[in-house]
Image 1: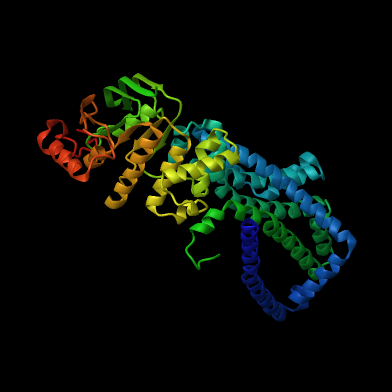
Image 2: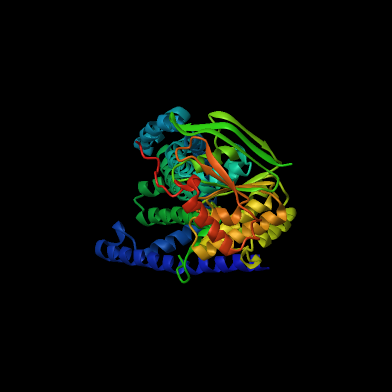
Amino acid sequence: MAFILDRLGRAGRFVWSAWSGVAALCLLAAIWQVGHEAYGDFILPAPLATLQAAWHVLGEEATWDLILLTAGRALQGFAAAGLAGGLLGLSAGYSPATLRLTRPLVTVILGVPPIAWIVLAMIWFGSSDGTVAVTILLAATPVVFVGVAEGVMSRDRGLDAMAKAFGAGPWKRLTTLSLRHVATHLFPALVLALGIAFKVAVMAELLANLGGIGGELARSRANLDVAQALAWILIAVAALIAVEYGVVHPVRAEFERWRAAAQPWGVRR
Amino acid sequence: MNRLELAQVGHGYLGRKVLEGIDLCISGAEVVALVGPSGSGKSTLIHVASGLLEPSHGVVRRHYDRHAMVFQEPRLLPWATARDNIGYPLRVRGVGRTARRARVADAARQAAFDPADLGKYPAELSGGMRQRVAIARALAVNPDFIYFDEPFTALDVALKQRMQDVVIEAAAAARFAALFVTHDLNEATRMAHRIVVLDAHGRGIAGARTVPGRPGARDERSVFEWVQHFVHDDPLFGHVHDVDERAWT
């Protein structure tokens, strides 16, 4: 019972904290409105008009298929990048030699702009889902890799020695101590990687003419329909926010309950 | 019979010898205090004895079923509650959740840790309570040998005495043998059956003294007198309070 009440309490605080987020969004809308009044309807349609356009677009059945298509591609690439970056990061964190070899490679891969990867992937894979997945994989893996490797390296050796003194082998120490510690470094990296995945998915769709939200953006550009383009941007951002606050943050909160306990009274995020 | 034997044990870091020719034997329910000046290699010795470090010379024979260890810092998992911290070694050993809960409650009681605080995280506990959790964690596995590596150095005098009493009572009840590293002669005299003095440069054991009476049965006055005797009249303890910090000389 106390368990359920504790969960409910935390969920309530989480929802209540959304008010500050709404306030920030309203501020953005106000600045947007000022821009609209200065430059007119053609350059920058009003936020309310954009919302109406987005609402209208969302009313069509085909829209949801497009959103699911893009979100599916983004999540597919995100999962692949998370897995690859996580495993590589773990091995590099434990082996300094691997880390020294992979660090420069990560710098090179991060240095190549995602748009270049899209061009290469289009040549290699043609206009297919593979293009999107590979581009996300290349753009998002280094972020996860660095987060996990740093996490493993910054683990508390004292705790490791403690576990060893109580007879924990390397595998037990990895699963009960290191992975738990890595999780705190992994979540910020995952949030970043998720954002990259959505952005790259839309970009790859636009350039490779693969449909989805990116395809719709390409069509709006062809028609010089700014309101439509802004509506699709709004939808893409909303999809990202939905995944981030619906999945990543609740999981993270579950892992970091002890941090909330360490906060002094009255200080809440 | 549980028994720890060190024969001609030596250890070095990067070619620099820290310990050499250590012979030590602890058995039964004996609590042995290991004292020595700062930097004499006490910590290295207990790490070698417990198996955290491999000795570069000599042999360590551990004839007991399970050992446990209490460190200078509590070394608790910050993300786990006191209950899960005490149960951690049991989890490592694959003890089931329900069996673990009973053992944890038992160990917490032995370490005089309030059961109402078992659901709290280490960040919510005071320094003394954290060290109690560390002691309860060591007791939870029902060890027949416990290594203590200066566990109460960071605590204030009153708290230190209470924690010493907790360990003395637990040792009397559970009958485990223990190697207790400390640089505090008063602590050594209160807690141990036998005090072993490490050579100032880690070259063997300088000597040993058996403290009369049983730990827990000695009154404060006789403990004080013994410490005075050791410090002023016994040449063996002449260097214990020297500070060397392993300077490169």
